[in-house]
Amino acid sequence: MLLAYLALSRLGIYIPLGGVNREAFVGNLDQNSLLSTLDSFSGGGIGRLGICSLGIVPFINAQIVFQLLAQIYPKLQDLQKREGEAGRKKILRYTQYASVGFAIVQAIGQVFYLRPYVNDFSTEWVLSSVTLLTLGSVLTTYIGERISDLKLGNGTSLLIFTSIISYFPASVGRTVAQAFQDGNYVGLAAITVSFFLLVLGIVYVQEAERKIPLNYASRYNSSRSGGLQRSAYLPFKVNSSGVMPIIFSTSSLALPGTLARFTGLAALKNTAVALNPGGSLYLPTNILLIAFFNYYYTFLQLDPDDVSEQLKRQGASIPLVRPGKSTAAFLKTVLSRISVLGSAFLAILAAGPSVIEQVTHLTAFRGFAGTSVLILVGCATDTARKVQAEIISQKYKNIEFYNIDKFGP
Image 1 (cartoon, rainbow, N blue to C red):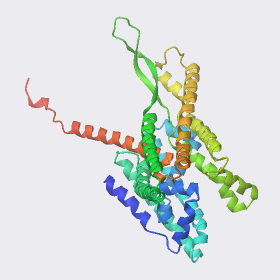
Image 2 (image 1 turned 120 degrees about the horizontal axis):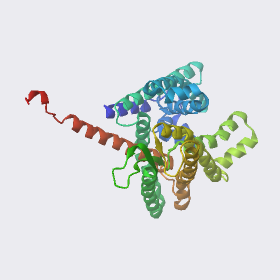
Image 3 (image 1 turned 90 degrees about the vertical axis):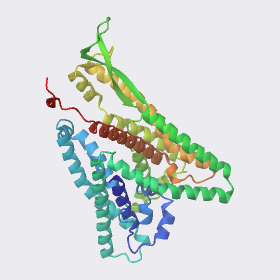
Image 4 (image 1 turned 120 degrees about the vertical axis):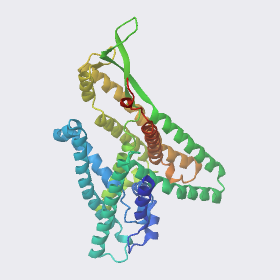
C-alpha cells in the first residue's frame, strides 16, 4: 500500500500544464535558488510543470502557520495540549482546510510567474491552470494523510523523501557528465567524499541527545543506600528544529527578489543581487537567519515553563534543581546552549555545498544540498524505526497464548 501511494503521488508530476514553453522556463529555473529548492521538494514537478507541481508545500505552509498561531491564541494551545488525540484531529482538519487556501494562492502566483512563457495567456487558461494545480495539491495532501494512517512514517516527510530521491539520479548524472567533460576527476572525487561525510555527520548529529536525569518521588531505590532512584531521562535533541530554519531562511532571502520583480525598485534589485547565492551578503545573512530561526523554533516546540509544569505534576525533579521556576530557568539555559550547536550544524549544512562548489569548480548535484540530505537521512532513519517496531509488533501478535480456562486445576 505504501509503495502504491508513493507511485500515485508521482503520477501527477508527469501530467504537464498545457500551453507553456517548458524549455525557456527550465533555463530560467536554475537561476532562482528558491524555485530550485521547491523543485527538489516536488521531485522536479515545477521544472516539468506538472499538475502536482505544488506538491505538499501548501500543507507544510499551513502547518507552520498553525504552529505559530498556537503560540498566540490560547484556545488553539488548549486544543493541542489538553484535548489529546481529538484536539489534534481538529487542528489537522483546520490545517487541511487552510492548505486549500494556500494552494489557491500559490497556484495563482505560479500561473502569473509563468506568464512570459505562456503561448496564449487568457482568462480561461488561468482558471483551468489554477484549478488543476489546486486539485493536484489537495490530492497530494490526501495521499500524505493515507500514508500516515499506515503508521510506517510521517506521510508528509515520505512524500518529500520520494520527491527528492526521484530527482537525485538525474542530478548526479549531470554532475558526473560535467566532470568528465571538463576532465575534473579530482573535483568529482572530492564531491563524492564530501557527500558521504555529510551523511555521516547528519546521522551523528541527528542521533545526538542531551540527556537530563530525572528523579521520581514515587520510585525508590531498593539498594541499601536508599533515597530516590534515578530511573529516567529527559532527552533533548541537538537539532530539534530539523530543517525548518533553513527553509525559513531560504524564503526570507528570496523575499527581496520577489518584491523587486513586483515593484521594480533599484534598491531592492541591488539587495536581491547581494543576497543571491554567490553574492557578497548571502553567506553571513544566511547564517544569521538560520541561527535566529533555529533559536525561535527550538523554543516554539519546547516551552521550558510547560515542561517544568508537567514534571511537577508527575512528581519528577532534576537533581540539584528546585521544581518550578528554577527548573524552567535551568531548561531554558540548556536549550539555549543546544540551539547554538544546532545553529552551527545547520549553518555548515547550508554553506557547505556552495563552498565545495567553489573549491571543486563543479556544480554539486542538487541532492547534495544540505537541506535535501537532512530530510533524506531524517526520514530514512525515522521510517526504519517505524518498520522495525511494526515487525516486532507482528511477531508478538503471532505468539499463541495458552487458554488457562481449558485446563482444570
